[in-house]
Length: 114
Image (cartoon, rainbow, N blue to C red; front, side, top):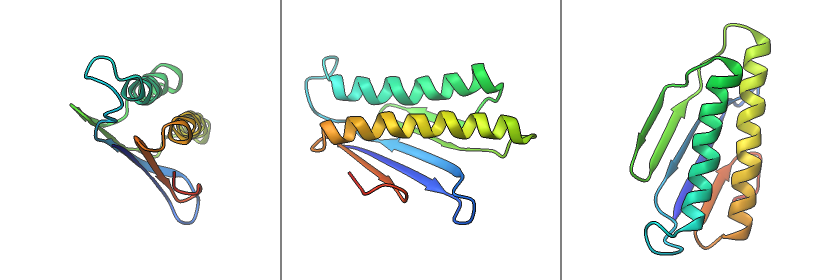
């Protein structure tokens, strides 16, 4: 199972970190569309933050694991861009979790756990 954890600041609701771990085991290695979807969304978001906000997130990545602590941006506009991209990632990952709930679990304090 893929476990996704989103951590937010209690006061501002700002996303401060995320972690994605595990394998969906939906299909054989190399054919698992659930793992591929989660990977595409999460890695794509990290790349989009760098390309569109100009911020390189501190990322830890290895087989079946991706995590990052989200630094506060130097200015409010950049921070807003980063947060919007991360919220978009959560929407996409939640959609995958709704469709493949036996293989993906998303925990975000703003959403009912799926």
